[in-house]
Length: 262
Image (cartoon, rainbow, N blue to C red; front, side, top):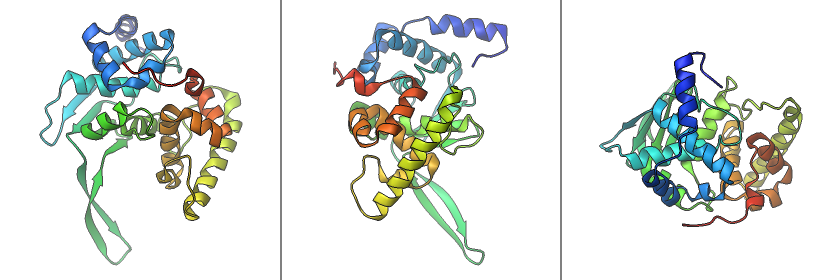
C-alpha cells in the first residue's frame, strides 16, 4: 500500500532498499531469531520494511521505560516479520504510535449489568487499537521473541490484530488480497475455531493457545503466533489452517526447518 505523496513514495523506496547497519542486524539476530528462518530475499525485504517502520512510527516509553534503539528495532522486526511476503511498502498504514511499558501494566475497566457498575484493574501484556496505537510489555516482547518455539509472542499477536483490523473490523478476516482465498479461509478458520472451542470446553490439549477460543479476532492472533513459532506442530494438527495462513502470508515456515540460532 503506497502513499499518494510523491516525496513519501521516494523516501519509502530508498528505505526499502537500505540494509540494516551491522549493529542493527546484530540486535535482530540476538532478539528475533525467527528472522534466521527467512530466505535471503525475504530477509532483505525485512530489513527494508524495518527501516520504513522506524522512520514512520513514533515509539513512546511508558511507566518509566526509557526508549532505546534495541527496543525499537526488536519491535519493528517482529512487526515486519508478518509482512515480508505481502508486497507492501507502507507497513501498518493505520498505525502511528507504539507505547511500550517495562513489563505488564494495568488498565482501569468498567462493566455494568444494568444495575451495578463494576470497576477493576485489568493486567495486560499488550493491546492493539484501531485508533492508531499498539501497547506492549517490553519484558514479555523480549521473552517471547528470544524463545522462538514456545508459541507465545505478544508482539506477533498484537500486530496480527493490526493486520486483522485493516479490513475495517477486527474479526479474524484480514484483507486477503487473493480473491480465491476467501472461501478456503472461512472454511479453515471457522472449523479450527469451533474445534478449539470444543477442545477447551472438554479440557482437551490443543495445538493453539486456549485464549484463541475467546472470539474470532483472538483466534486469528493466536493462530499467527503458532504459525510462526510452532509451524510444524500446527501443520500436523490443523493442516487446512496452516495451508491458508501460508497462502495469506506467502511464507512456509514449516518447510524452512528449525531456527538457526546465532
